Each structure stands twice: as structure tokens, then as C-alpha cells.
Image (cartoon, rainbow, N blue to C red; front, side, top):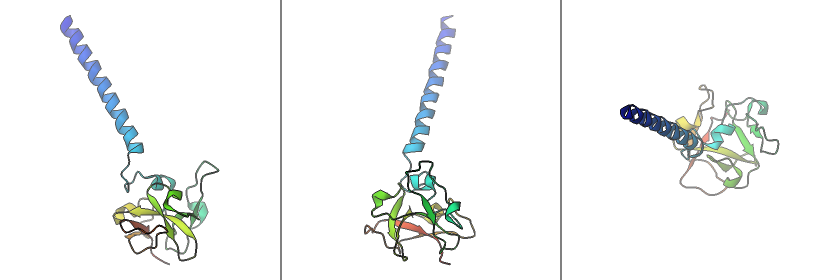
Length: 149
């Protein structure tokens, strides 16, 4: 009988260990996201998504949170947060960019093109570019920029 209890105890211990590891993995997946990976806050709120109008951009449920606007001058549009003054005003995974129209917007930052197109129509992909004017001078990051209309 002791052998049976030992097997049952080991099985229960293994089950608990798997549950703990699974829970920790889930929590880390939600909060330990790679700086520029698909799990960034910018991705979750929709920065860089395709749009035709601001109504197409995901909007936060919190009424006090910044509202995404559509920049229709780009092919496929571009959902961004307007009037940032520094990177701290932007969701994690995006940076404040000085746009040619005189307004600053939070743009999705990137390492490669694939990161830029998680929420974009494949017919109008964004490029990962360092050819952009950041509000806070940057030399080590790039931003997702869709093609101009």
C-alpha cells in the first residue's frame, strides 16, 4: 500500500508542478513580452493597425485613456495616438514621432518588417524604417511606417 501512496503522491506533485509552471508561463507571456515582439502594449492597443477612419482603430475601454486616430494619408491608414510629447506618453512598444503634418504621434517601434504588419492589411504593409524623426532623438530604434498615398 505504501508503494501506491508514493505513486499517488508523486503524480499529485507532478500535476501541481505542471500547473505552477503553466501559470508562471502565462503570467510571463502577459507581462514579460519581448520589447518589440507581438506581445507589446502597442500591439494590444492597436498602434500601427490599418484603418480607413478613426472609427476603424481599436479604442480603449477606459474613457480616460488616449484615443487612437487614423492617419488616412498613408495607404491603408495608420492607427496612432496623437499629441505625444515624449516616448513615455506612448504605449510600451511604440515611440513618439514628429509627423510631417505638425502633430506628434505614437508609432509602433520595430526590429523587422514582420513586426509592423501584425494588424495590417497584407495589401498595404508597413516597413520598419530608421528614416523617421523621433521626438526624442533615437539612434538605436526604428518605427513602422506604412507607404504614403
